[in-house]
Length: 82
Length: 263
Image (cartoon, rainbow over all chains, first blue to last red; front, side, top):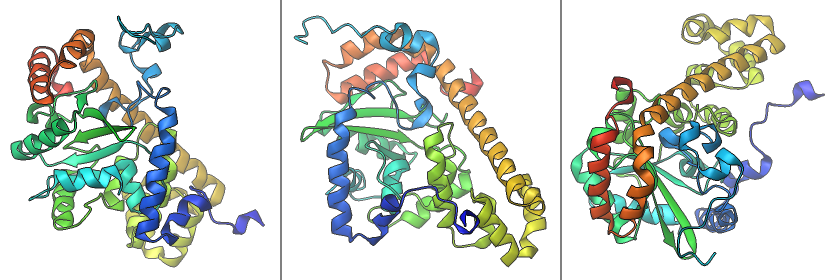
C-alpha cells in the first residue's frame, strides 16, 4: 500500500553514501567530479550558488550571453582556433 | 582527496576562515553527490579574504562575473565567483560571508561550532535554510536535511514530508499549537494528508518566489558591472589574480552598489 511508504526526496543510491567508509566516499566523490566535467560546456554561464544562482536564461536580457538571448552560438574570440 | 577538501585545508591553514557550504556540504552530510562546484562561507574579516584570495591566486584562478572578494560588497550579501583548472578539471569556487536566510546569531554559532573541525562544513539546520532557493533541485535536499535534525520541534519547523509531520504530530501533540504560530502550514495537520501536502507546496512556492525576488534585486543591481564586464574580463585575463582583483574593485566601486537594497 503506497500509504505506508515514507515520502522520498532522494534515491536509495544517494542515501547509500552513509554506508561508505571515508576513503570510499573520497573515491566516489572524485569520480563524480571527473565525470561531471563532461557538462562543462553546457553550464559555462551557470552559477551554482550565490546571488547569481538562477538560470542564466532567466537573467535580464541584456545580461545574457548571445546563445541564450538570440538562440545563436557564441562567436569564438579573436584568434581562437576553435 | 577531493580538490574541495584540499582547498578547504589550505584556506584554513593556521585559522578557521572558511566553512564548506551548499553542494559539497551535502556530500559531507552523506546525502548526495550532486554538485561539481565548491561553495564556502567566508569569515568576514580582511585577513581571511586576503588569505583565500592568495590561495586562489597561487592556483591561477580567475574571476567569473560577480562581486570582488571585498568586505564592502560581501557585507551587502554579494557573492564572488572564481575558477581555475586543476588536473584536467574545471574547479569553480563560490564565496559569500552572509548566507541567505541564516540569521547573524545562527551564523555566529556556526563559526563557533566548526572551530577545530576538519573539514568544517555547514550543519543541516543552517544548510536547509541556505538551500531554500528558487531552484526546484534544491528542495529534495531540504527534505532530507530536515530528517537529520535531532530535535522533534526543529523537524516540525522544517520537514517537507506530510507523512513525517503527521507522525511527528502524533508523537508530540504538545508541539503542534505553539509551532503553528511559527509555521502556519502546520495548521493543516488537522485536515489530513492531502490538505497538508497542498499547504506544504504553497509554503515551498512562496519561499521559492521570495528567493527569486532576492536574486533579481542583485541581478538588477549588477547591470552596471555587466555592461563593462566583457572589457574588464579581457583586461583581467592578462593579469595575476591580485592585480585583476584590484581592477575589479576599481570597476565595482564605480558601478556595483555595495548593497542592492540601498541602490
